[in-house]
Image 1 (cartoon, rainbow, N blue to C red):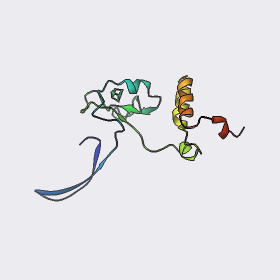
Image 2: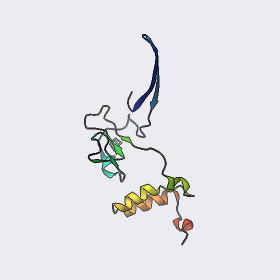
Image 3: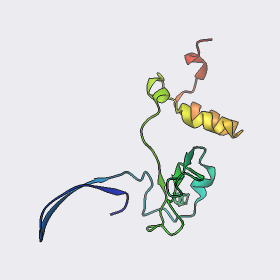
Image 4: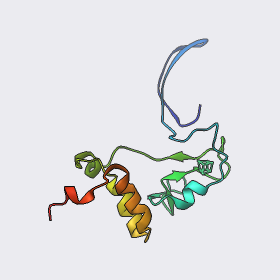
Length: 124
Ligand code: SF4
């Protein structure tokens, strides 16, 4: 079982009970070929835990080159507080990250996806 933590093991030889937490991958393993295109365009940078934080990785990633299965996964801890408090649930983290990379058209698409009239929420 991949992306799974063991919480507790109880019982005795031949009759164990194991409590697991299976994390969501957010990518369909049956369809993912492991090409890595999603990581190339992913705007969210994160610390690479596999390399003890010595380098960065993208939120869409494969933990290490030889990982099996070869499907990618997405680090998604929770919904960002700014998205939760936004009346339209705009993915602020997403569009701000895209803007930081100069990907303005894609940033606008993130906003327009849920908020076709962005000026309606402006306080200016
Ligand atoms: S690695 Fe990413 S882009 Fe490639 S098939 Fe898997 S999910 Fe799709």
